[in-house]
Image (tube, rainbow, N blue to C red):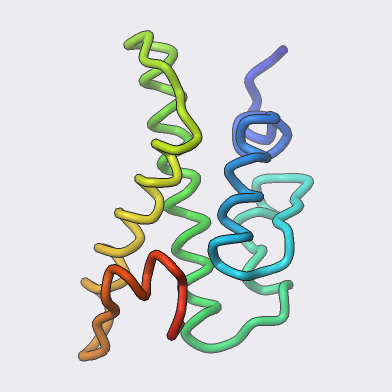
Length: 118
């Protein structure tokens, strides 16, 4: 199979699992996209507003980065890809990103992991 951007980030069964887990974690409708553009603009079309909308946008971008990094580790370093590892990375990087950008409203790790108070 050709490795297109859309395949890597959307149509690959592995990444479909990642996006399903992100949807569950963030308590949003299932993430379905037909192109990378759809994926990156998803936060505009799922009926959320305010801070949560910005958070979802950031998480999608972080998710893409983590998927890309895992794909490259597999391709170039022969490192096994694990869904749990990618989800851990998305949550961890997202937590640091969110708290570094929040002005005075830091979220605790426990709240972030359960995605409350967004």
